[in-house]
Image (cartoon, rainbow, N blue to C red; front, top):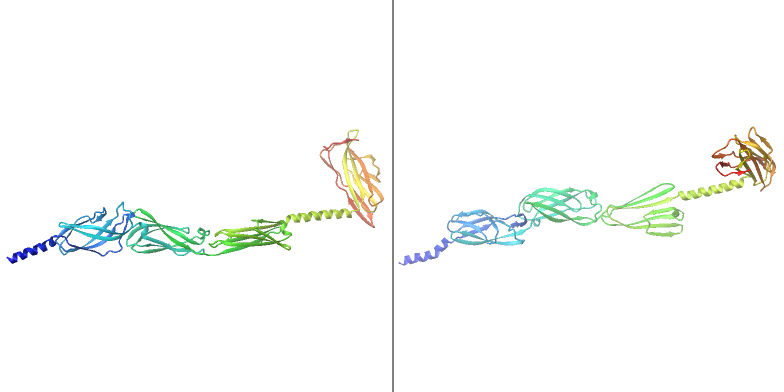
Length: 457
């Protein structure tokens, strides 16, 4: 009787334990992430051991997450099964960060509460991008992209963008893997950039979703100001000064040009100098500039000596003429005017004024007649000494002419053939003696336009 009671008591204590589910659930997965914007599940390698009776077990949650596997899993008493356990993100889930996921293991005789820990992130949280330092002399730069999480990306498309370069790459990234790339640089693309930190952007596309990851590029400081000066020209002299900022910081520039008090009068500047200072016979011109990277300051200083040269030539010509006039002993001035003859012939009155500047003796004035003209018999106050109609020549002789003395020689020529347009007469010539030497003087050439008004004789 006592044995029966004892067996009944043990059955009451042990049977419920045998009939209830009893699972030992473990995982060897760590740092598990769920990437919600690409619908990438949190994946666990689970080891599930059944400490109870044989049963079919199913896993589910009350939070709306999709879980795999969905089918029931048979596990015998004492058996351990390895299961790939996946939890997919919820479409309406806005949370990111560490998350404790509670779920149930359901058997035929009851259920068991379990939990898993993972981190919910967006796609751009999974990567890090960066680059080596760049300076104005760099021909290339090394960039990298690193997978920061425990997730395998089988197919990625990455577009790198920066003020220095652009590049596209297709790749895969294992958990925590880092890949580097060397990019060739074109210095013209960044010659005008200032030193400092710039953004390196990477547009990462995975599973049809694109997200942007940002990093930094350090553009190292470098001062490099090249100066060139070119001088050219003779009468128009040009001084060309160029300063090119080949560094990546703003360069302070001071430029000075010195001119004397004469050349400054004929000098122009482009651009206009910022300061002008006179010191004795010199004048200093100064430019103060800030030159941006990749830009060139050009200063053009032009001195035009043509104008002063023209002035000197003009003055010299005037002085020469004055000297020549003062050196001339006899001046001859010849003029001509129309006359209307009674018979309607074409007639001209020719006048030669002889002006003695200095004493002259044995003076002979010779004038020639035009080939088509005839000489009229009447003359002015001074009668010619010799008339050679055959050779068309008239001469006047004077024993001496005193300084300041003037003689007016005039005669009339005519022709039955009219002349139209501009009519030119030969020059008159004087031969004389002064201080025992023979000299000559020549008059101007007289012109007449036949359209002008004439007077009657």
